[in-house]
Image 1: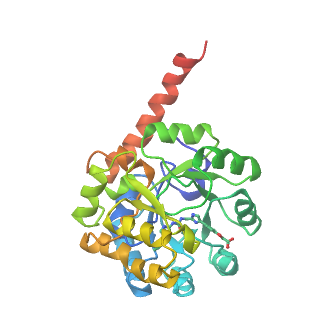
Image 2: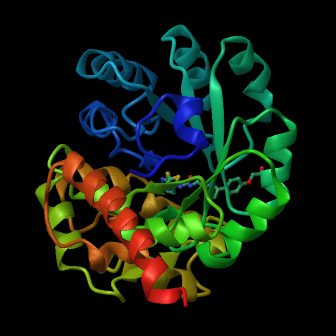
Length: 315
Ligand code: TUI
């Protein structure tokens, strides 16, 4: 069994977080992950604040284990969500795409453990200074909004800089990734892409099929020219988006308008004009299976490798 200090801090069995994927991470997926011993997370990016409140309430009915909410700080309703999680008694938050500094006082007073997602040492230090319980360090292999650095150099540099537990994210998909993250000094992992193919994940069948068909070179980062790089599967949508970005006659507003609502279309409708956000490890996801089996494979796989390493590599 693999354990770390984050398990005791959060009251979870395994140090595995499920990514708080926008439009994707709902009560069905979060409760399945939490029931299997990981940390399930509900995304705040959904059809409004009340829809997210509803998912929180559903999750409380589906599990008696700890779960959390991921707050996308660039969303226009981030302030509303920040209040709603206090009202609903949510005890664990992860935050992404910005600094949660303005909410920390209220959340800490409510006894909430805050775990910001960061992509640099500077932000990790800032988050520790404002009272973060732990941080998720997310490398650019991940799906969705990405930073500059990749997981291999990002994790050890952040681990060296902070005292709080570091959860590694970006490119982690099986026991090998988990073992590697622990060797880099992380106290746990966050996995997104593989959970897209969990049985309990409610995304469109087209989304799951596209992940299962993906290869090593199936993802692309678009949005750099807008200051908002996003990794997603190569599709007619993302290729058109990339073309618009490289055409100087296309205005940034037109590109933004083209992208608006595209993630929801992929998740809910399986539309070819959707944005299928996914990480570089999409090519490693081979089947649809229960969240419990994914967690057991991640943990069991890492444990086996760590045991074998003693005889494989030590003279
Ligand atoms: O947030 C993410 N990943 C996301 S958010 C998202 S929603 C979306 N929908 C439509 C279009 C685009 C996005 C999809 N994927 N990951 C966490 C993360 N946060 N990674 C990196 C950061 C980050 C980046 C900049 C955190 C803070 C930051 O700057 C903070 C500051 O103010 O200095």
